[in-house]
Image 1 (tube, rainbow, N blue to C red):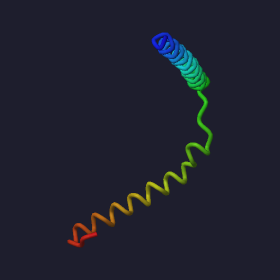
Image 2: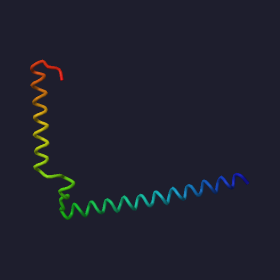
Image 3: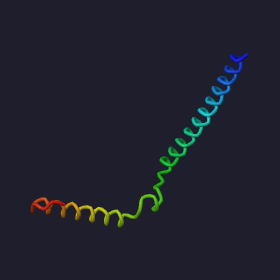
Length: 80
């Protein structure tokens, strides 16, 4: 009697796992189709995702200035 209940629970869990895996696979294929369509259309991402080129340039300049400051401190023997 107990063995039958365990088999029913195991079977139900297996069916549930297969259903969830199938749903995840369909979702994954849909996402891939969406990305493929975006690539085919040659659509560029919105400005909010990439940020403006001017902002990126400012960040790069600030990063370079910080690196130069650190290198100058190393050259002069100062510990940061």
